Image (cartoon, rainbow, N blue to C red; front, side, top):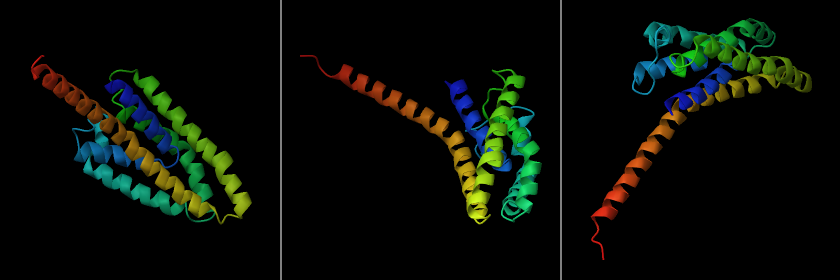
Length: 189
């Protein structure tokens, strides 16, 4: 069950990296740093939880956020991110899923690379040019903000939902056992 939840989490985080490379990495690192019981990273991915790496990722989030809102600079940023986002997706997939010990690292990294690269390609080749053409560039800033918000929400849900699902399963099992216990304790007539 943990492997399955980890894989779902990994796909969500790598897809999120296709929109913004640094948000999912920051959320993975922050979760592992501040709530290690929720997300335990294996070496070498445990480096993401280092406070200096978290600060660096925060700065990179800010730089990408600002660069993506300035006309012309956003196109340069997307060109640079063509290489960064798939790599970030590969790291996010392998790091956060806890699958690196259960699935071949090559498969985990390749899966993350493919998912993040696919999302980034769809954004850069289809979505952004269509928004630019239909709005004369005026729609790029709102779309960019929406992408950042979507990337953040997707990253958070990719980590939280598997934890929430596991918690609900434990509570359901506990309630079921409590119900059985109460039923067995009732006198038989």
